[in-house]
Length: 468
Image (tube, rainbow, N blue to C red; front, side):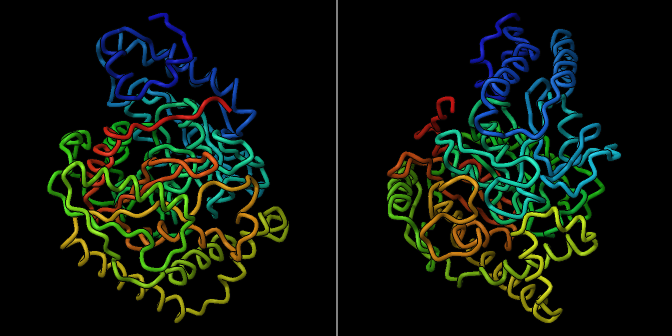
């Protein structure tokens, strides 16, 4: 148990648990390898806003003792893990990427996701970067600056779980908590070439509720599908603090993961009937979709048949931003990202009747997709309409767009409908940046989404970037 090679940092969580059980490697050595990656490379990518080496190594030493006795305390005992800086973590400040948050705390509570990971023995490395309060689809903020893509540090990793995605890609931990209110797991998963899963709403308990309300989900971001399934086993454990959470079913998401997709009925929609997609992204996804046919699924080009729900989402998101900032002092508001202030001001323009109309339209969209999945097991689309663009920008140069939601037409519908959806790396753009394929499943059937992703991964393994 003395191997300290940094290659340990790239082992999957499922591999690590097997090697811990056989006493071939130590959680301490793995933690040191991941900390070494952070020390060597985070200056180039800015994935972390907090690293606590002392706490990490103490936790890893305790895990090592449990494994030596043959008594791991849970499914992720000893696995190096990161927490997005929107999730409360006892003893660590949760600043949410904002200068307006008082760092003095008190920080005396774990969110449900963090609590479950700790109870299952995860070794926490630190907290990953987010745009301020997770408001946009790229990762930069006034507090910690710009987070960068490991494939090209001049490009954005996307957001809002950009730090988590970068950390995953570079071996700075095996398991990573992301949140997803409009694509914030799937966007950076696509831009950085990792796997990210947005579970069915309520599958992973959340407390406190996101300021953006019931469009926001919590889920795993990892280098392999199996690791996300393993992590979901833990994250889905119950917590009474979330009154929206689904009844706990004690599901093992690793069970049946390799059963394949033969016979599944899959609808493939390259544009959802309204999106404009970059040609190189469209080609990469179109080529990848053939894999599902080769694996025995029935794949047919079908649009799900709804109009662009951008305005429905905007009403929910902008109103959430207005509510978030409603009690901020003038001094606090002066510290806030100007873009967040702008959408909050726009959110104040919605009347109660406007907002309720958006709620009703959201319900109709959800019903539409429930009926759609009575015929189709899965829906496949591109994850995004574009590949990663210049870091530090909300919108790439040279396009007639104003806000990040305009280049995420495939993600926001399924936050509104609350369905499970994941992004799987499927190829590269013409300039060498990762492209994601989006798999959407019927509400509550996270298992089917993960199974399809695993089938694709088995044929098209996901490469990771060289060091930045």
